[in-house]
Amino acid sequence: MDSATAVQLLDIQPLKANVGLRRLACAAIKQAITNMDIYGQPENIRLDERQLSRDLGVSRTPVREALSLLEQEGFVRSVPRAGVFVVRKTRSELIEMITVWSAIESMAAWLACKTASSEDIAELRNLTTSAEAPGEDVKSGMAFHRAIIALGQSSLMAELTENLFIHIRAIRATAMRQHGWAQRRISEHMAIVEALEERNPGLAAQRVRDHILGLVAYLEKYGDFLDRHEGKAVVRKAGLRESRIKEV
Image (cartoon, rainbow, N blue to C red; front, side, top):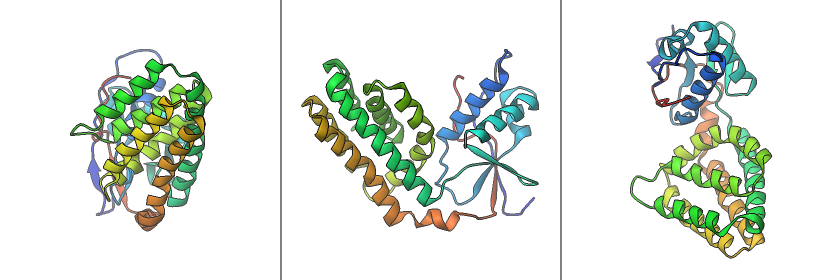
């Protein structure tokens, strides 16, 4: 093993003996990857199949099958004679993902102005207001965006954005630690809510789009660290320690 390799356990709970262990293992590992700080560390993140098997309390077969499914979905990649790694996107790939996200969510906001109930929009305001409290983090920010997608009442929109959010959540976590991003994000969320309350679809869509594309501007200005890390051979060995899986 390379001397630069670090060992880090992923925080995960054993699975209950049940049918469909492959599905349960897949959900548990995906959730743990979602909660990881993928872009906040220089090393690539390697998943240890044996450690995952021990953490989940199952044999290696459902873990191996789960990792195969996750590779098909683009969350991990298998490198011959090296192992299985969490996929990290390049700066250009992230910018493309964020651009697609902005198009989908701005349409969801446009639709929400026409179909969402006043009670639903009031709940979105409450979510935004509570996010201003101390301790607000990227998790509540992503809850806001998922809520807008839900208000668009399109299951396809929700499905398309959910897989994007794994990488978007991770890069937003990095952005929110820098350059006053968190406070700016809260004020922009409130402006989006106000446009929804006014039932102004054009304005709501524009504010959502401008807000999300602000993350593109951040990456264009500060995302050179993504280019530096691309293609590095440094490996970080991981179990499931950075996120605790409470249920699957």
